[in-house]
Image (cartoon, rainbow, N blue to C red; front, top):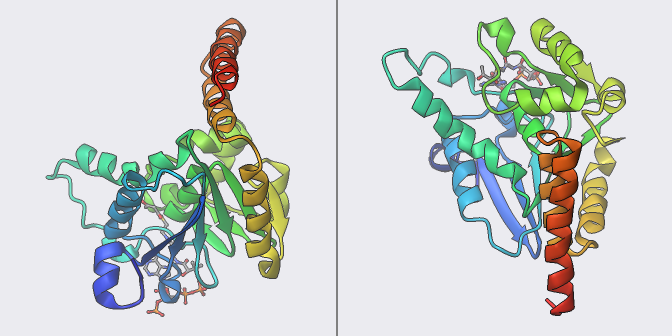
Length: 251
Ligand code: CAA
């Protein structure tokens, strides 16, 4: 799955996918168009999610070139019309983003330069974001008369809170590295030269933890917000019983 030539871009939207043991890397590989995202790219993302090798525990999402992603390919603009079944079509696009939250993996976005609109939402779909000191997040959709609809609104509110999310989206302003770190959008800020190494280090840290415990813990953490303290305590017990049983049976 290589980007570059026009035929591959039509098929894959310019995505590259590589697996190295327990780490998979998805690369947006259309730097000359600032990794603008097409419908084909979103289908390809879905396909990658559906066919992810079972051994993969960390999924890195990165972009080639100066920008992580300039958002939706503006050539796609206006091609969705009110006469079609828009709800189904958008649901199909969202599938490409949703799987990145699966408990079986930890997804890490490596974000340099611009992450605009769909680019910002792709980064938000990942569990963690490591960014460069020149990062520029921008939720541009409202400025274009639209809403962010690629599954980014929930993680944004959960990460930064409602007031800050309203501020960021309804002004379509740019969030830079220092603020991204301060408000919880980014785990770490590094220079461009250090980005690949920082992601590698994070992947190694994540892989050092027992896999089944990591999956169960991510499941617990993801469910925490929707549960009462009592329910969450019960969920902790249920997961721990499974862990203790598995460990005593030696698996
Ligand atoms: N779609 C298609 N092509 C794009 C693109 C996009 N979103 N963003 C950049 N490109 C292309 C440019 O047209 C240009 O192509 P040519 O060389 O053929 O002219 C090339 O990429 C390089 O672009 P720039 O010269 O502008 O590069 P830059 O580094 O100076 O600026 C940028 C980068 C700030 C990202 C600027 O390109 C830009 O503002 N792009 C548009 C961003 C945008 O509005 N995206 C849509 C957001 S909304 C969304 O994503 C979700 C939704 O559903 C509505």
